[in-house]
Structure formats: structure tokens, C-alpha cells
Length: 150
Image (cartoon, rainbow, N blue to C red; front, side, top):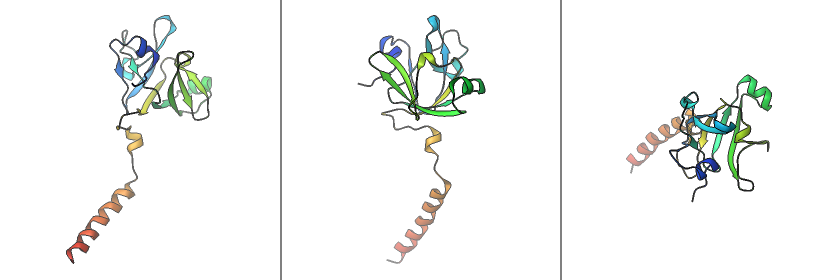
């Protein structure tokens, strides 16, 4: 069984699963609850919430005002975690700092880097140096030439 954000686990009704490479945002909803939604749904009156699976890796992209209030640089990687006691959705950063979904500012944008159990990775993580491609193409003709001698 996959663990997903508490909102989705308890109110699973018309909810989308997060996918690697997707750009999401934080939207303040009714009762001061924060939802994770697609970037294009940030201004929508009835957005579709997006479910993050436990251990999903994300890259936050902070505006200048968010950097100052949250004490981060322009970008920070975090891991989404579901705390069971008490039930809370938390983002844990590399320095150990934890911020609950409810404490994140509305309008904050982030990219999904990797989703557990999914083989698809964000394009940011899939980028390989061009040198590797060049080395492989150089090896193929050499191997072909070597085999031609036998």
C-alpha cells in the first residue's frame, strides 16, 4: 500500500497523483488549509488537489519575499513525509529543518523531482553530461572495427 498525503488518504475524491517533472504550487483554501495543486490551478476557484506520496522528492523555488521569511536561498530540495503521530504532512529539508504543508506560504512553487515507486525521474535528474554520449558513440565504431577483423 502506498502512503499518500493525509488529505488524500482521508478525503480521496477527485484527486490527482503527483508525477516526476510536474510543477506544483501551494494554494490557501477554505478554513486556512493549504492544498498542493498544479501550477495552472493556483488561481482557479475549485482546483484539483495533487497527492504527494510519502518520500517524494521536490525542489522548492522561493520568491525573494519567501526567501526572507523562510530563511532559504532561491531553491531548496526537500522530501515529503507523512507524520503519523500526529497526522501531518511535512517537508524535510537537507539541513533537517521541517515545515508542515500548512505553514508554507500560498503561491509557493515547487517541482516534483522523484516519486517513490515510479521509474520516471524529473528531466532535471535525467540530464547526463554530453561526454558520456560521445564516449559511447566512439566505442561502438571501435568495437565494430575490432569484430570485423575476426
